[in-house]
Length: 490
Image (cartoon, rainbow, N blue to C red):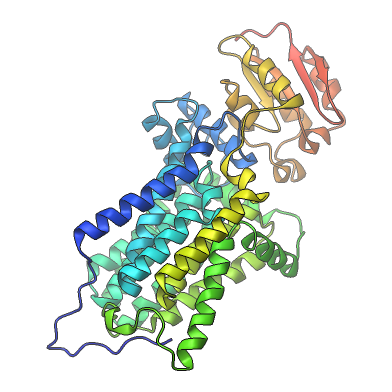
């Protein structure tokens, strides 16, 4: 589908804004749906994912005076942990407070995609984009728990929304806003870099060099300011070099296979709506009048073709994920914004979209994807024993685990440098048996949990912990062990 013809110069622009009452009603309904699908995970009494636990432990460390990068290890961009800190403060330093960042990101993403969908396809496009962002599983996965992907894709989508408005009505102010939003998105998580493709195309097409410099300068200023705030060397080492040190693993083919398997389970609503849009598009080409026509599509101005912008973003995101190493399933959530906006542009009939997406969402909920994304329950079995034991530690006691969420949910603090016990840290020698034992030797550290091969691969760790006064309190299935120190002094 191509852009609608631009309106004559003497014709008034077709209004992008719908009736305010309609907008308010839509956003209230979409906001309620967004919260309903995420509040169960917000209130979950266990850590939901490894990242949820790492960033929860990081929030507690910052709450107690640790600074990002300087004290608290951070594998994400230099804006992410400050956002976690803000969410934790707004959450009144409660146990679930840091997860407010996920909820806020989910709501912001739905709002931004709704508004961007209106730029592309009027009220129909807005409802399609906002509704799919609210219900699709990859979005739920990173906006119900603590993850950098949620705020990153919300900010990236904001940059694209501003670019769409700039395309219709360019101004230097919008160029600056684009740069700020895109720079902030990348400073949360560099994986959203493909959003720069549609932003860059819109700017270049506009042929306003002062706006190029304004947008790029704003993005660079955001990145440089945040990097130097926490120390450029530490930021570069932890958020860039750390990832480049990853050993070779999955091939692009394996990553694409994971992308497809994830989207056809978690994101069935997106996939099913995409199939509907394809069928409707073929029928329209055969001459059938189905769904809204271009008469009610908002004026698109004279910029680059919208379909080109959206497909370029979509394809660039697929390529980024294909060549990422390692690529984890939460990263696939970055496909949500370009997918939603493509569907908003092609606009299958709204009622048919609602029926197809609704059935797909119900199917996702009742299959194995639903329990994993929508409700976590509490700790069970051996892990419940570990967390209950940690909860019984003296007030002020610290604990260490290669599953840091266990310590976070027990209400205790992890030493700043060990809030992240990821495999990449242990495999690259950034975390070693000696560094774990050294931290465990502090007077206020009372427990060490080995829960995976991350610490379990350290063959000399048991002897090093014994030398620091630790004894095996409970041994579970190999390699899981709980160590306690009797003479700790929190």
